[in-house]
Amino acid sequence: MAVDVILGLQWGDEGKGKIVDYLAENYDIVCRFQGGPNAGHTLKIGGRKYVLHTIPSGIFRENIINIIGNGVVLDPITMAREMDNLDKENFEYKSRLLVSQKAHLIVPTHRYLDAASEASKGSAKIGSTLKGIGPAYMDKTGRNGLRAGDILASDFESRYNAIKEKHLGLLKLYPEVDFDLEAQEHAFFESIEILRSLQLVNSEYYVNNALSNGKNILAEGAQGSMLDIDFGTYPFVTSSSTISAGVCSGLGIAPNKIREVIGIAKAYCTRVGSGPFPTELNDEMGEKLRKEGMEFGATTGRPRRCGWIDIPQLKYTIMINGVTQIIITKLDVLDAFDQISAAVSYLYDGITSEALPFDIVNKKIDPVYRHFDGWNTSLSSATTFSQLPDKAKSYIAQLEQLLETQISMVSTGPEREKLLSKK
Ligand code: GDP
Ligand code: IMO
Ligand code: MG
Image (cartoon, rainbow, N blue to C red; front, side, top):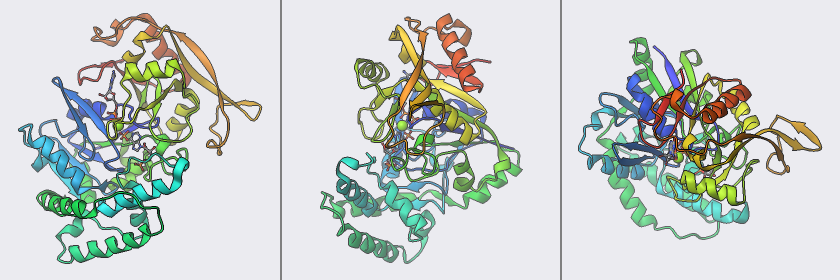
């Protein structure tokens, strides 16, 4: 039937995993279409917390197929670790977890190169998660990569060795970094065996046949649109196409199969790693957002940088993604604020503008803020949108007006059930 997309409208960690897990029950298939284990998607179900990096967030929903698409870069080691965690939960998922034969593999020397490349940049480092994402996508576009389907070939090991030797040559260009290659290679080959036990599929046929047979698909984005390789704050970005266009190339789905593009945005804004962040708060207010929102990375544990919601930034990502509806997450984090702010335009080069400038990395941008009354009360007891305090409803209504896009739901806590539909 159709493909709906869930993706992040800011710099990642918007709460995509929680929303995918919640909405997955309305779909037959959930697919990851880009990124890799740099993602950390947190689900809170029945008092338990799960963090998924490679496995799609539909895995906890019975009977739903989960596909790791061709656009993903897959690290068998992380994948095996995630599977190990799921195995402890005593539920059946392996028959529902499919991997595209065309997904590229992250090999240990990709992570080695990531670490060495970051070390060489000094204070100009990207703040990569060091999961080998950049080097793996470089090998993909450089036409040197190994793909998941290759693990079944009889010469897999010699092809692995060839790419490893190439990487060892490149590593000579960089400063030395600590990396236990032997131990990592051992873990890699062990986890390749586990990957061999999963169904490796021609996923573009699988998803298109499913669509022809009336099935519905949910595509789960990783990272956020401001980390997109083309439209993000380059070079402080990730190496994949994180926007809705990435669904087509990352799954083999035609654009006319895409129905809803559901953009996820926090009620404020965070970023982890280096790079521009116009509304960042380097003060007590930023500290308070970090504390109330428990803003520490799900993949690396690093403290996330925090600031107010940024309307021009969101309008930009709504535009490039063709967002049809927005879900606002972490509204409850603002419970403790007397006043809430939102950037509505920028001041730079002596002018007021709503446009993100090309040289955003070097330009000093002063956000122009609009302020809203806080509601100063806990949202936790609201079980419907209409039960929210008037000031919270008013904040959402004003965001909707500023963004010129429908807000369909708001999330008021990390738990699966804390999601209120506005309709
Ligand atoms: P993702 O990468 O977009 O899936 O998001 P992360 O899992 O990295 O980060 C979102 C964090 O916020 C996780 O710890 C979630 O459990 C948590 N979270 C999600 N939605 C809400 C919400 O509405 N309120 C609160 N307080 N926490 C939330
Ligand atoms: P989810 O899916 C937040 C950031 C890193 C770094 C930059 C490049 O959980 O929202 P990379 O490892 O890709 O080379 O890092 O991108 N980054 C994320 N930030 N959430 C993520 O994923 C991220 N994945 C990468 O911090 O600044
Ligand atoms: Mg995350």
